[in-house]
Picture (cartoon, rainbow, N blue to C red):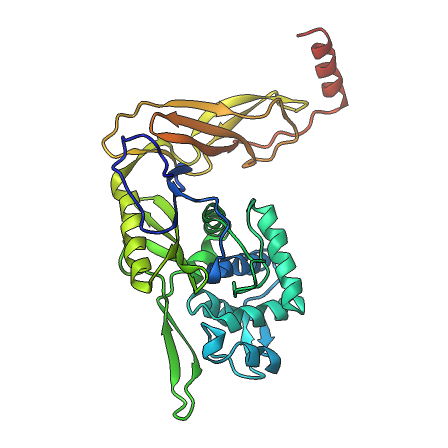
Length: 376
């Protein structure tokens, strides 16, 4: 079943078993095919490992130049043709977090994931617990991780396309600098060949890089069980799309469908600007605050997504759980802008407080209580 059901948008039928496309500028879901089906993610699970590491770096809990030791047991388990994608790490090598991240994101190294997980948490199992905790926190409602690298584990690891898109969105929005630094590299060099000792350079398998304008991530995946999958993103003219395809039957099929899918998203749909970043949208009442009102502003450029050439017939309303109570911090998400159109599900965008509002003092609260008592 594909969304939207309206015929206003040019039709599209994905060759993937599972497909999902979302416009982050508006929150509009442009296409969904079996998007909530549980499935093995293969190497797309590595995005969750990277998210956890990015979060630790942002919080100052982990330095990018910290060295992680390659244990002989880990290298033995994750080396050779039967161990899948590899960074070609060596026994007893000390490798920085930065290089391991490149090994995961660009090379899809199974070995790099496990070395990083063990270096951070002592064991891969302990790190996986952090992955599941983070997944729950960011709203991956239908996903669970059993490994740090997505290696087949008899079904313990599963995701949905919708959850993968959420993970991609949170990675892009929560860590913009780290995302830009790591996710758009076309190649990376690590390890040396046996015998001649030449450097090993591997290319990023991202099928959008160099083929779609503004493409800058994220992660491919492939196992016999999962087929070929990809979670990707591109930004054009300030409009960012996130896409997921899964269950494709070949490397070339994944590449062709990924490019076709995201280009349809940019061509068949248009973005209509609503509010520029920082623009005032509405004012809401504040309860028990030093001020009785606070402004709502757009935290980023907000736009609605409509089928290309469609008339902009839409309803816009501000929604919040009231009353809004002090204290409130400037930039705090306290309301949503909900846009309803004939051709899409509701498009929901955040609105934030324009200023700090301190909690009222004792007499202010007492006076507010008296007013409410008399219905004033």
